[in-house]
Image 1: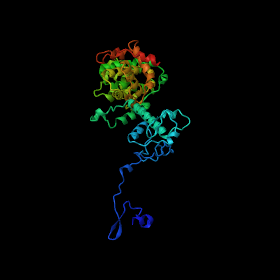
Image 2: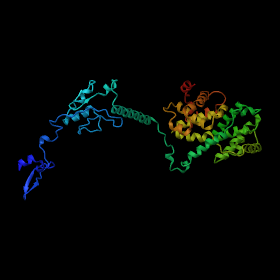
Image 3: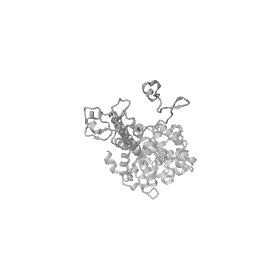
Length: 433
């Protein structure tokens, strides 16, 4: 039977059986064996097998990888690097000899599996284009560097402090509405101010007379121990009235006394009586004259007493500056100096308040004077405050000289922390002019 199997392939062993035939019941039955091979046939690609052609294949743009195509042990998603070559060498990867000869060395290092080419060699060679994985890696590195720079810039940005969080449980602070209130103040401050040339319409008084009147009223306010709001409202009522009504020289002090009476009625809990105001003015006027001037003023002002003065902005901006008692007193000293000066009427109340705080900070030589928090709540940058601040420094220099020294004497007392004794910020004045 063996001879007939060799001569007649039809009777021989079927090709699809790995085993042979055996006789069972007079018939040939396929002999079922396990499909096993000798150990020498296992993994012929790794041990003693002929080498397969391999190349550092430059694939098309969508693939962006370099592999040995025919070798299944090299993953298709990894670029050829020195580290990867070392890993493959440890796995006894067969060398790529045939096509590796066609690749120039470029001072490269050859391992047992593939030729590894330095990235710098590719960059310095004009013959071959830069592999796509090199470009892709460089793009990722550049993007990471840019992201790190952006992150560093974000870290350097000064945060804005929530100045109302500490008053969340205080109903008098109206935290829920405070931003809307000050937004309204900013809109209303333009209508509550007066033009700088209103004094030109007066035929019998001038700027110096106004300064003498305001300086005297500051002393009266201090002697009566009135609230700060009363002083700022008094000055506002005087300027608004003089902008609408002509006044003779001998009645100017009466206008000031009456304005303080109206401001006390609006702001104070306990209002000074008319006789006290007449007495403080050396009985220059009668009670009847005060009442008549009061009627004239409220009609000229159309009973509008609710105006934003620099005081309301001072309180908010001092809170944003996280001020202490020393900074607060010096800031009020600066802004009361401005009340006397007629030329400061050209600045809105909010700008006067912000500039007073900024000038006080510079006078105390504190670092990081105008913070992002102050800039956010005041809506004024440091550059926008410089003109007004320079004028305040000039007023501070001459505060103790001349005739109008009421503010200087007031803030030279222990009660006001000797704020007027501080040295003016001349260094800021010299560098900014």
